[in-house]
Image: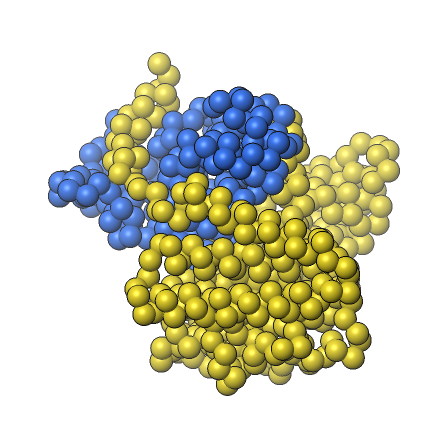
Length: 419
Length: 182
């Protein structure tokens, strides 16, 4: 037996206590998940049978129903103690709302132009009108960003049409014949007729550049070791690979900036920022790098290290601190840290949120790529986990441990004041 | 796995799919739990896997690969949750996970469990996922690589590093669990 096999066998024996005794919760029983599946399917069937003009109305009714349904569950939980059954109902209701919104989006129904600016935040689970995000009104304002791609863009503070959901694309890949999939990697992204992608043949992570028309041979470059590529971004003949780096003294995110010439991919700059990589947002030639870090955020470009410029935050330090670095693809950079910190961070496909917990409530802020923060709304209880947040179709759902589902529409007219 | 059940499930039979899920659900949950480090995220990841798998089952070509295919979907879900899971920087909630052990287990077993969890917590999420699949769940390197959609060489080198870390940690006096022979 090889040495490693012996070691594995020994470790397996040592780790036996971790294998035994973990009891799967009732919420993950086939019975419960099957019920969730059916709830989601029911909503899909309903919307598909409707004429297009009826979809917005149906959506409004659905969201209001979910809102009041959740309120009922929330009340039941509050009064009768939290039970698995109630939790399941709650989850099923939320799943139904999400599936419903997704299908509405697919239906390509557009609200009248004059209605769009009325879209505002809302809170399901409690109809109190004094929330920062507002309350979903009966005109269905909460739904505007789910129905109209243009409005959804406004909600996300971008001018371009909404990009395809990379996560969904990833899912499609899963459902292809998984056993013959190529090596895992990022991309491809296309720029100036070139395809860029990463892969790891033979255990070495590589960046490739190939002509989109399939002609010629692909150029390649070896990415720095111990990096775990998380994203690929390109503009013109420049391409950036964002990676999480483990090992060494501290965890950090790194971005490798390459320039494509006729016959080579050349590494021109290395940007580094302390912390766990949360997200990278590309705005033209600029990348915004979000990390969660220790109280001090440091960054460097080609080894020249600096402390991030601290920004004021409205709440006292609690939990991790967010670092927001901005660099251009041709190699200039600066970074901010959201000094003051937050209890939770949540990254959706289009937004980055910080939840500040204080005095029994949670104030939720949207963090912009330039380091500005914008209030989204307040949940009247302490939210404990970043996984309590979920954004879909321009609505941020917050599900605190205590129960209830709070939903905030993200389109509220002009973007709030940024620092 | 029962191929007839898989065929029925592919045609949309929810009962068959539920039965298939029930066979592997404990394994899915354990992998998610130790990869993500807390009950809440693990529940989300497994529930999402169930829903996604049902929708995509029709495209599964080799019925014998069902379990590995489900694990592959779970690994994608876990990766997404790891991205979100920044407040605790991807570490394990040791107190919560220790409490999930056998009820009525001895104090010694509890300590051993806590020590193992402490050692696991020192690994990166990627390393932890490989350890969970190859050590706790007992998958081969080839199977683990297929589930993670990574080259076998990459998984092998990551496993090597992770094993080295674990070996050191489990041998340290502060961690009182039983040592692991190298």
